[in-house]
Image (tube, rainbow, N blue to C red; front, side, top):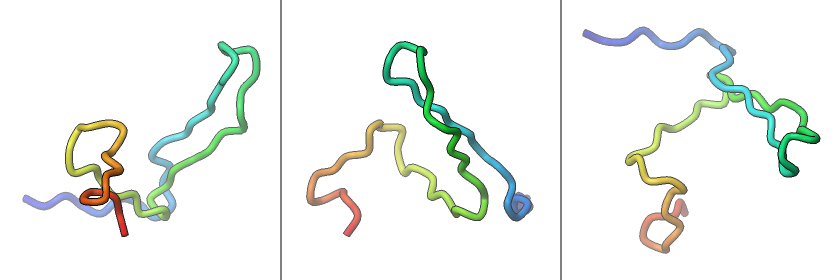
Length: 56
């Protein structure tokens, strides 16, 4: 059974960041299907940045 491709331009995630305990927030940043996000190979976070694993 295959999964149908996601709708073009569909919002997958919207983030707003606060660096001062919620007093102020950054503008929203959306990740859409147009961004073609690559799934993580593992659940390790943050991704390893050693020479062997970082992207070239």
